[in-house]
Length: 143
Length: 329
Image (cartoon, rainbow over all chains, first blue to last red; front, top):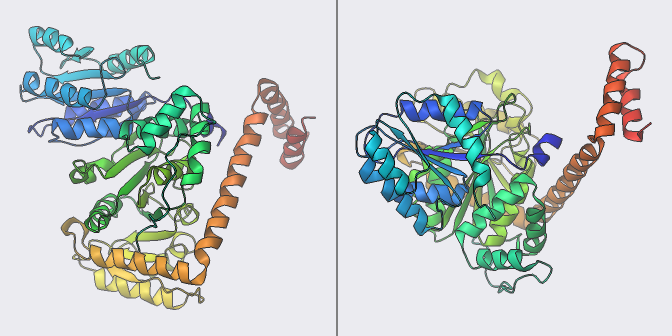
């Protein structure tokens, strides 16, 4: 009871898969790793539209929106999710956007311009993702 | 059956709130979902701002109908919740959903996955879903669940569905938290002895037999009915409703069973007495948490360490030590 009522800095993460590819193994592994790092992970399942993801991010008031796409459609889908979020007041200033998938370096750079603070590829260590989140969430404007 | 909307809510911001909070309250009462989401976070985490907002919003709550859903992991609670939400939406009622999943006792992390079964509600702006981690609470809810419900209520939701963590036999807090409790069963959940046990079987106001297209459904329904016939008369016979949630079958009947229960609560005056019980329970549990918080100071922890030593080495016994800790001596 005492622990429950004094836990003020619990990090909440939305893990979502936009688009039509149904391969969510990576997303689930990341979700599990972030859970094991002590975070609350809202998992929404596969085949989500940008609006569905943005709506979930809004209602759940998450610190982090982590997206995974393996079909190669990340340049198409990722920026659309950010746009749907920004429409609802969820911006890179108050929320950390992370991308995951098989993403070439030049795309990663473009995604950073589109509001993603980091992109993690197949070689990424799950521990690094958790550490990245923990390091950067305090910098967000959550007022 | 709809909640009263005749009383015009006072939309003036509460004067006790300072600038930023007053603005947020105004946005929330204006229907701004982002403001609602932020206030829910503060309330959940016990943030001081959450407490102030709750104090300002609380007088506006008390109008929503609350329905709890509990049952074993995998019984289909999330799917039933999704279908019930759709049924209430068809009647034009707005819906809030609070879905609770367990926190890890080791890391306090959690996977909150109830939304996976509710994606078709996302495009409906009159449905607001909030996933909560149990954060160490043991009764199937989280410590902040009641407060979250109060805020959704004040926000103007007509119906609030509360989905508990996958419950075993003893997670019965939902019965105190919601006006109507649905227990979601499935066929072949064990022999009839399971239905005789105390605890979760006793708190159901409505019993749903989900997946009732599977073999064993008839037997489950008769076993439940037989059990219920042995219950002492509580003035309400919990109906047993067969459903197949994934197909939406039987959901209207389930919603009607909830309506009947609510009507009975109103007619018998139990609605008020249950509200008093809820208030009393929330006060005591908050007071208990407060007392514990006051004990867990630095000096309190040192004292506890000394007392633990005494108890472990048989110099003192647990009851004496607890009294000493409380007395601070």
